[in-house]
Length: 113
Image 1 (tube, one colour):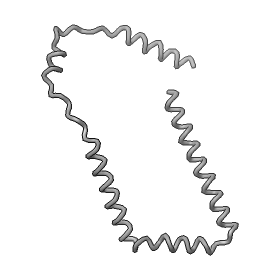
Image 2 (cartoon, one colour):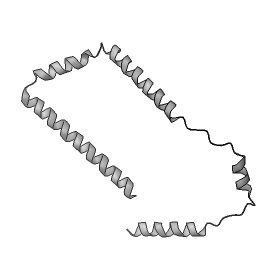
Image 3 (cartoon, helix red, strand yellow):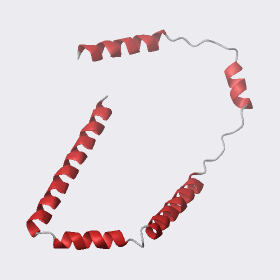
């Protein structure tokens, strides 16, 4: 707790000590001569990413024998005893809940910093 207060004190002192150095308008002249910022091409980036994702998905589908592995996995899962399926679902749920809780705690720690 004391370390946080000391950091705040040092931060405040550094901000107060920083004086503006008069450059006779040099900074303003340089900024006026810079070209205007180009418009962001977010929509173009999104279209490219969606296209690449679709292409990769189609490629994975055809390489994996039209998704046959999914049907095989479901068939194997249906053969398992019901208790095993319940245990698998419960374990998966607990692991996903723990992962979500860890992510939430990590995010809340970042927000408090």
